[in-house]
Image 1: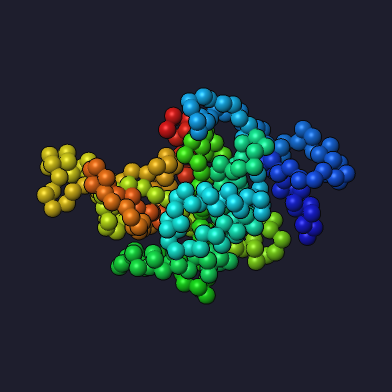
Image 2: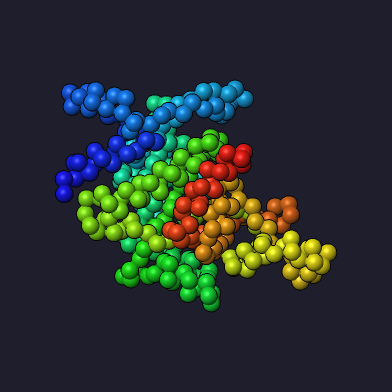
Length: 318
């Protein structure tokens, strides 16, 4: 199969993607630019208003979605550092950053105008090709899970050497990232995963992106240090208990869970397994809530619903 033709077809089918400008212009680059002028593969730049770091002045900015590259390493690493290196459960975040930026065909970075600093990224790494990198995280999660959860975890996230069809969904962004771009961020990664299953250069790589499940890492505030299944059940039944009894059982306070990103609730509610682990140096705040890291597993069959609900949530002003 002619991989050049595959690349051209892939680019033409990316209505939300703009290729990163070349560092140095050449005759070939000019010829490509002329031939692609007005093509739908060029991203429609979104004019947005963002609040600058200093003062309250609102500024207009053009936002572009790009394939990651070596020049993004510094900025992706900074975004990961904002979440805290411990947030990745022992994964070497420096190596994680390099792998994200090396994987140019499945992954997106977001940049304002022609500035060099990225304001967001999203990527999906296959556990079958990055098992060594993900090993520390798996060990941590295995220690966190017991009984049925442990069995589910081993099936979704098997040990190295066993067949694995899981993708690690990694995304970080600045605090004031425009919410209207969040759906585009998720559309970009799931579209690229779908394309990769057909047009990656080798059969092995194509197969590596045929995920049956995903692992999504995020942070949240909770008053529960128990297991995820219990936490999830408490969250769903809290209103029912209150209505029936008028108050909560003395020996079981209702679990509280608050995420920072609006799409996290959507992913959480479509999950098949959720585990959490503590972060160092975190003391409870008012209300007894403490910051914890959540490992949310969800099946590939839930992707369409998740995408729909993320887009709908923005439309409803979430």
